[in-house]
Length: 177
Length: 299
Image (cartoon, rainbow over all chains, first blue to last red; front, side, top):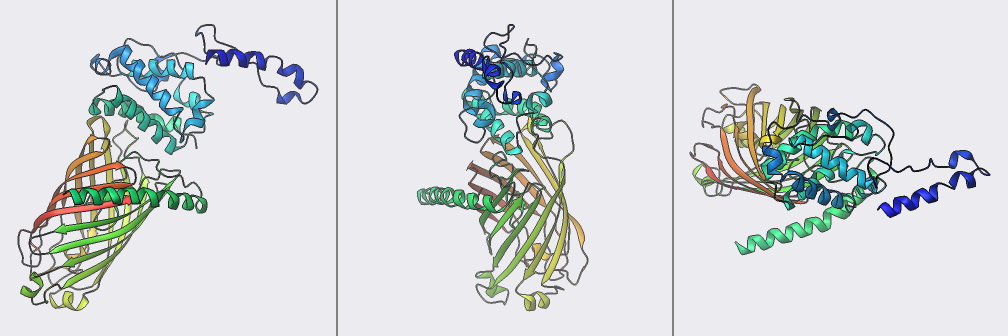
């Protein structure tokens, strides 16, 4: 993934030179890699806040422990992202996204909401999904893949639903069409 | 039992084989008609009257698995085995954009041997056709988890019974009736609990199987129907339902209906609902309790 992105930087860099003869509009902005998070593409600056996670966290650490702590959440997110980029219903939406960043911010978001000692550094749900064009049925497919990922990693069904209840209202910001 | 399992598997396979190309064709005709957007079981199952809900109680959800960007639809066949009667129902339902549901159903209330005792003749059967429309007004039963606001829908069901002469003879006022309802349904996801209630304005005797209105009362009255369901996993829910009914006919008292159910949906194309139902007294025959079995295929 990192190799691809670095390659993309080199390909993107000379593009403006070539484009000058044609139309300047066609040139893509250069891809700048993040210095803070190696392997991730730099994003537009934004105000960081745990409030961006879009849900109030559970009290105590019971849910965090039920999900297996940092290790458990990490494994769930890895399986979840693997599934969504392979799911023909929604793969197109996420294939063009920075999956390194996606995995990190999802782990932070779930960890924070589950009551873990984790801060969320990502963008809020509205701005992070603004350009993805997600439909209601895509949201359903996302939830389903998350359910399967949680089951695969041994999260009891009731605990799954408690987390999903926190995530469900985000549909208002995630679904844009 | 093995035969039932085989038959169920065959129906499931058939449903998948038929539903997919049908859905693809429909997608070409209707804009915004993706299929399968809802989570499994969140479209409910088919009620005896054809609309989406539990088995006996109608819910505010639209049937099938279409989301706001899609359509859903299904067909159902339901069989209720009672000590002195048999009740069969089959029908179809289609929902558009998780907003409007249109349903049709045919019910056959077979008096079997009891027909002779009632003076109707053995095997005498009341057949009732039902056309229903439901419109979701506000709320989302599944996703609005940060508010108490349920999903609310209103609906109308028109019912026509083919035994007008018998209905008139026992004191019924009409062989056709129209019912109006408002339903509210909420999934309390953190508790894995679904709660639904509806008020139906009706003058139906035994939901119309014995006609509409009677010598004791001929007005539409508000009646309640409600369900509570508990999700055991993504594919299995158990619960109970209660439905109150008018008591319009002097010749035979009518009881409220009750059931406990389990609904299993291995995928979005097939579900089985099994229930133990208590339909009380029907046409002077008491304690009509028995097995309810419903198959549904769709998308």
